[in-house]
Structures are given as C-alpha cells and as structure tokens.
Length: 321
Ligand code: SAM
Ligand code: SF4
Image (cartoon, rainbow, N blue to C red):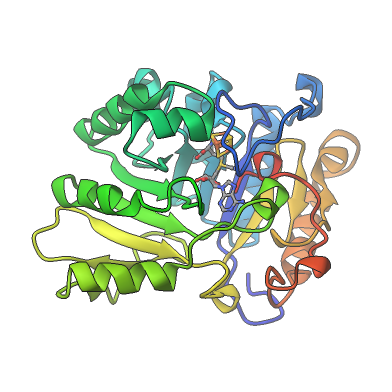
C-alpha cells in the first residue's frame, strides 16, 4: 500500500524482545527495565500481525530486538512467518554472539540472509564498546553463516572517540570475504543522542582517496536505504546508510513493531498504535485497520537534524533499529 506521499510500504521490522546479551554503548543504557514475558507478543500473535500486514502490502519482514536470539525459539518464528502466503523474505538482524549455534535451525526454517552488527575488528575495543569479550564468537558466527550459504551483511556504527578509525580494517574484511559491510550513521534516538558519529560522506571521500576505482552500484541490494559501492578486487561490497547526512525519507518503505506490539509509523516520533490490545481484546479486522492507519500516518520525513522536535523517547534497544 502507498502512503500519503506516494511511497510504497512493503517492509516491516519486528522486534521480538527488549533483552540483549550485549550492552553497546550507543544503544543500551545502564539500568534499562526489562519487560515481563507476558507483555511481549507471542509468536502466534506476531504471525497474526504478519498475516494482516500482507493484506496491506507488506512482503518483507526483518526480525530484530534487543537481541532476537536470546528468545531461543526465534528460528521457529522465522519458519512460521515464511509459511505465510504473500511473504517474500524474512531475515534477521543479530549481534552474532549466539548465531553460530542457531544456524542449522535458522536455515531449516528458511532463513536466507542475515545482518550482523560489528563495530570493530579489534577484540579489546569490541569488549569496550559492547561490554563483552565476545569478538571471537561473533567472527566464528560470521564465517559459519557464510559457510552455510547465507547472504551476510555487516552493520557498523562509527562513534567519534571510540571506533572512528576502524573503517579501514572493516572495509578490508569485505575485500577478503563475500560480505556487504554497511556504515550506519548514528541516529539521535535514546543513547544515540549522547554520542557523535561520523558523516558517511566524509567516509566515502576517505575511501575514494584509498580506492579511486570504487564505483557506486546502480542497483540496490535488499530492501533498505543503503547505497552500495563496489571496489575492484573486493569479494564484497561497501554500503552506506546515511540517515542523517543523506536523508532518504522520500524512499522510506517501512513500519516497525516493538516486542510489546507497538506499531510505529516512523522511528523519529513517539506515536504508536497498540496492536497488543487489539490482538488480545478486539476483532481481527481492527488489526488490518491499524496497519492501514500506521501507513497513512507516516510523516513525510524525520527531524533528526532538529533534535528538540524528536518525540520518540524509547531507546533503540526497545525499538529494534
Ligand atoms: N541486537 C541486534 C543487533 O545488534 O544487530 C538487533 C537490534 S540493534 C538495535 C539493530 C541495529 O541498530 C544494530 O545494527 C545497531 O548497531 C543499530 N543501532 C542501535 N542504536 C543505534 C543508533 N542510535 N543509531 C544507529 N543505529 C543504531
Ligand atoms: Fe544489543 Fe544490538 Fe543494542 Fe548492541 S545494538 S545493545 S547488540 S540490541
């Protein structure tokens, strides 16, 4: 379905938990309150939402969190959503810590591609950024995912004063391996307000100096706003998600749902529709109506550049990115 601004909305990010086994500095504040399990949507409820979402044109689903794999039966949900007629792709974004052990089950349930967050190639810095000595586990997961034949995209957020110099080693990883490394500009949501990031345009300029033959790919890879470049001699690609400095709201194709069933038209604004209440107390038709309403109420653009106008107060860990 198209929104008021003519954008085709065909993609939904679904968070399945607020919990995480890491504490990334820019995402997870100290002392976040955990939501009781009974407040989270069950997998059956999530499937009901997806069945209605298909009716309004959603074809692609991304499972996120918190860390989706701390909900240990997450692979089963991938299979349940994959079997809904009209769904074309279900993928997941994970920190990769637990991924390796789940890969056989994820594959069996039809997972074809995965996004793994990786902000550094340095194990000590990894621990400093995430609070956990888990770099080796994540690297093992990345290689296991490639061996399993999954399409692998790595997501990196660069923070001034922490990992801003890591881009060279991360880009080199895409030279040696068939992965897409994507640099995401930090967004001023939750803890993201506390840190300064690096502009992707600056990064592209640095990369062009190092790799003068790099070329922008004409076709997008996947369902998102990333712009990709290829570099001769590289097995993988380098992508940029420039939410701040390359505002791409005119191409926005998505809505989001939190683990508690709050349906969000836009990342920047606090407005949401309570699908859990509808699922637990109202008629099924109300679900489809609510999805149509969320799409109809999508604003034209975010206001990240005017922080006093941002009304979303939730943390990224509760929204799912
Ligand atoms: N735990 C999973 C992971 O780390 O991939 C899924 C949830 S996490 C919230 C999803 C993505 O959001 C991660 O790639 C993370 O780097 C990104 N993220 C978190 N906070 C952000 C912020 N303030 N700005 C931009 N990206 C952010
Ligand atoms: Fe957890 Fe992902 Fe947030 Fe890091 S970015 S704290 S792994 S939810």
